[in-house]
Image 1 (tube, rainbow, N blue to C red):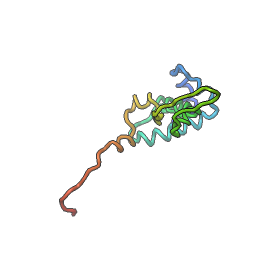
Image 2: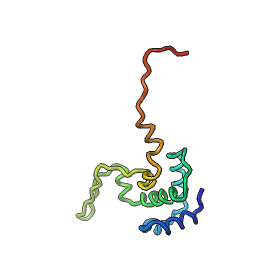
Image 3: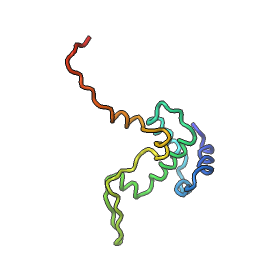
Image 4: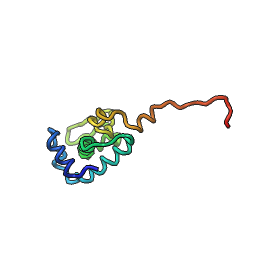
Length: 124
């Protein structure tokens, strides 16, 4: 597992927009959560600092209240005459950059595999 310092240094050297990451007080937890999720989703991949850093940022950005509404199926929110529409799209659990590098996560591959129907034959 990469250390907090390794992830922090990679982010500061490679990511232009670090606003949400810089504001977060839970960076260590985000790194642990990102690594745990990536290990679950990409079991056969050796994870790098880059993968974990990108997913950690995605985890921190997911704390945004608007994204929480969207995750729970809220279509729109009105406050003081202003309205925000979220549409039907649900935020992906996997960071787009990680998905681009590592491809489809294991759980999505399993869901897309067709069910095999066995007909006839004999069990031995």
